[in-house]
Image 1 (cartoon, rainbow, N blue to C red):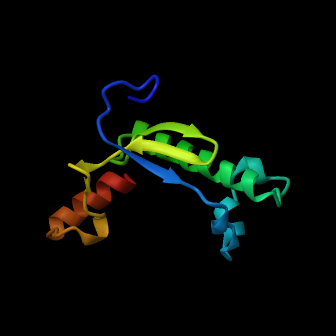
Image 2 (image 1 turned 90 degrees about the horizontal axis):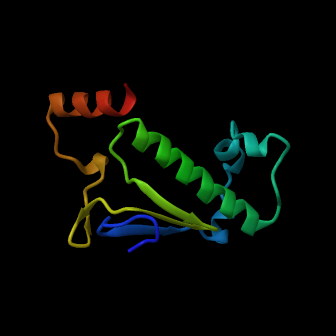
Length: 114
């Protein structure tokens, strides 16, 4: 049981590692984020913590807007805990692997974008 979040069941844990900092499109990823308006820290630990916080906020915005996504539960440093989507330890299929007909794809698009 996660403190302050009772009865959630299975959770997913995402650990952000400092090794992800070497990717080339870092500037695109952080553009538009007010925390980086004056540039960004070269300290990998601080950067990873900020990325985890950004993902937590983005998931929270999606979830509260009614988009089906994992509900973010807890963020601590560079570790994000969220609701697990699936059953018995098996993750639900990714949307890109969904077997949908044309109407199903249109419905998924509308739910995600509208």
